[in-house]
Length: 386
Image (cartoon, rainbow, N blue to C red; front, side, top):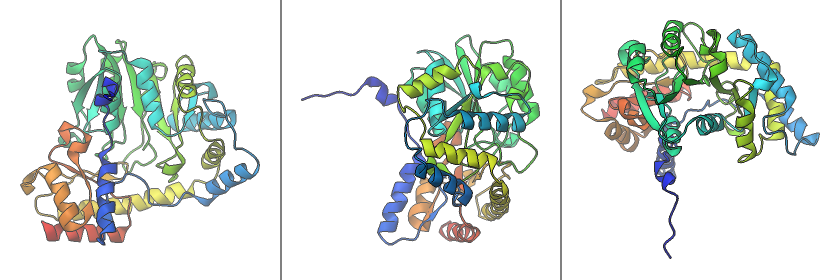
């Protein structure tokens, strides 16, 4: 028998973080003590008030299907939250609740991109952007994030990459993997470049509440851009709810039903009692978010100072998220070689910059979603093996 897979499967990428995690787990099974700085998820527990709200929801019988776009009370809560944090009026009809942030990304690209359409996306950047573009037959057009610009991209580079086939621009601020942000000035320049062009924007703002310098600025705050932008946000990063699978998209009322229809045809809906937990997350006390952010700031300072003390490493201070992205070009290793060296010789799991695209060569990504003690120990181990 000679069964064949669909040709499009060859275009599907992955997240290297999970591959490195598997390698690290194998070493742990062999008795090694690995410090995990590869996975991008908060190491804090979900706040108890959120968990209790979900438990009560289960006990109340909220264990059945919900509308594909999410229950109305949650969409209303998200709309209020987005209006408050972005300074732009949003309604529940513009919100689509999803089981995680990735479906928002995936469904947006499915809904907008035909074969041959070009999509400009940040590189190094979240690897699923490129994977989904290729999967749908689109042409990924990377725009380099530059260390000398704080890992923002040069708007003039954007201008040069736009062609009549450009259909979508993906922006991410604060950014994974660099921790960089796009300032208001840069976003205003981006908007000016594309304002007269038929180009959609997918604005990945999943780390918007984890900014250490300045304030988050969304492109939807610029007149005329709310209608052409899909915001991706969610609960995973702020409320330590990665395993709950709770994300949402905010978009105009015409495309929202199309995204919901894609959910109907695939995932059906988001877990009912998870949605009740999400309402509590937004409406309940926010002190856990503030404490987590303060702890991340303290860890950031520790890891940046530590990385800069290692010969051959150079790390600028990230302004957001919980990632450090040091330049390692002076170590004599390429990114993948050094990543393996640190794992197998130093028992420290990190990610190669090339896991996030071609422009990630010469860098590593460290997630400082780990304890201060473990971060200090990781720095010690790296120094020893270098």
